[in-house]
Length: 522
Image (cartoon, rainbow, N blue to C red; front, side, top):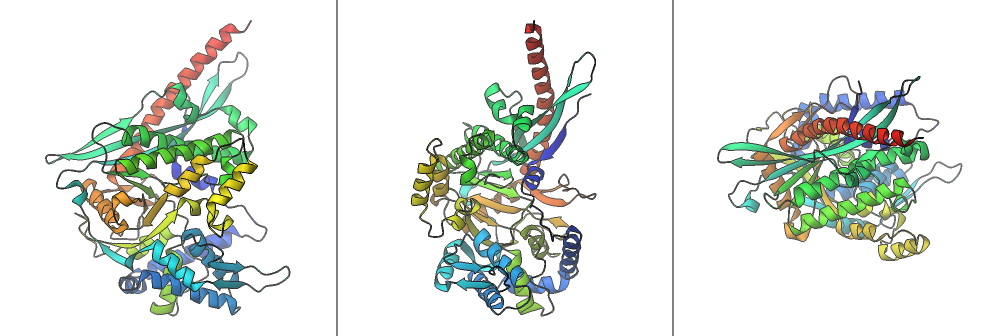
């Protein structure tokens, strides 16, 4: 009997984004450091972490980031221990997270044979950047839900997710038993609304994709035969992006009735393959990268016109734009024995511990502690703030297009103009045993101030409630429990179930097509 392996988008993204190994890298040491750091965080939860949480509710967010960068730059320039690690943290926070350029934060690595690092900050420019990219009076803020956007009516809250099915079809050979593999992607969603006093979930999916849609959903064996392994892995990730963007556009943003007030989609809003160089690759990988960019652009334009709050729920978070400053702040102001600058947890791990509180009352989500909001643009995700330090993107795109005349990069450039998100964490859990996802929403002027949008997202969560996601273990024996919006989790389970059905149907279609071809063979 044919069986399929099902993977979520986070598992595929994790496989695609795996770091390359280096000669002196010790996975045993890294795992031990991670365990030690995580244990210390959790042991300090009711003491040091609780004190830090209270203090960060009174700490100006922009001042914290500036002090963090200035202090780490001073330590690096003084030649203290861990200079390389501290320089990496500056790069993680300022450049990869906040989107600063090398004109604002210049990091000079040691010359060949040397050991001295140098960091130069343009403090005035850094301050201006922080004022434009960090929202919220304090690093941690009390957030209350807002329902003003739907004016007393019951809002429509939507969720979507995509799953990937690795399967194989047995070949009816006479003498040998073989099978032909294929990979199938499937997206599905849920619409939630309270009717009277009864909450109702309406499942939305495409039970029978046509050939045009299967062009992007079905990865046939020729992809793996003809492409380099890295290109093939990237296609697997981009195919999931394409499938979910197409679903969001056609089944959530284009529906005539019950247009969602809020869409809470599983995964980051930005595509997994976001680099301009990959956009112009003239093979199948390039085709999928271009299609993902075009589909996201369509989704954002529709979300802007409606306007619908288009929000991604990211679980497998790798950034350290929140966690590194928290580590530094605790060591500087709360606990002088705190180990900062060795191993820094990711934002997801750190904020799950920092924001969870035994005092949290989650029945109605009337009040949560949230992080400050950080603006992150597609240009940062595409690494253009590093490649174009003067931010003259128009000239850079013009020069790039002249060197690649066969591929029109207009969709990429338009996405750079349009795609700006605000990301934040909300502390809607009692215990750090429950992991918190990162919320990131597409922002434009029609939605109003970012803080108002964040309050509306919390209002949507209060409407549909939260549920534990036990389905994302990331290779752990014991599932990692994420607290997810119920519509997002419902969409996740639905996409897997519908995908299994479509997987069986696709296998039958392929077999029928094979038999047609076989009868034509002389």
